[in-house]
Image (tube, rainbow, N blue to C red; front, side, top):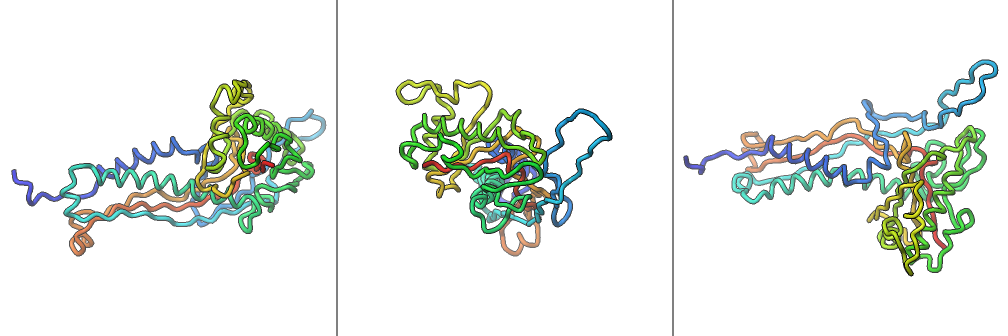
Length: 320
């Protein structure tokens, strides 16, 4: 049968291609490790539960119940879209899978969208001009205080973590990087909640995030068994903590800075709020738009936003 007049349209195959690629991209991403995914069904959500659960105590007298605190953060949902345009003749002619390739790329861009928004949060967590955390402070700050905690810091220098002092601040050795990471983890274990209870004492999983320039040293520090001079890697040698590393290209300004995040808490350092989507919207063959413009559209729509979670699960370091 002749195929000269065969109708080719975007549809179910491209939708399935997008969804499979989206799931694969999410598995490769650090988003789910750093951000708690929360479902939303309205214009914004208020988070008044970002405080610690009470520790157990000897039962003497009536129970002491802990309610939500007055501290809260509001995350307003925003609408986002991404759209591919194909000439209808090219849809019919495509024999090399280029349309599927573009659709897969759109799925990767969807995950990259969340990584970009969360990266901007991390950048603005230091000396931010907007978007403070639930306690009204910059996410990375030197004067967090709530309840019985006393003043605490998660904006750290060699004054708090001695191993942040290295030979060359913008070019540490892998051994110096490993020692700096362990020093940061040790410090994070001392952070307390609003009841003055240690909040990270059972933490085991951590993610180290650097910009590109510090990436090689910290990647080696988090993966190699031995370091320069055949020295045993102190990160690899210990068995209490699992540490992974991510190079974040959005953090190019971090030439002497890095961050450590706890990733195994029930809550996370960041919040990914989703109200809707991603919804796939297709304008295929036979539509009014296709008849008028001889083109078909494959688009994605989603509604949501990101915000800060528990500052106690993240710490920023500056090498010196």
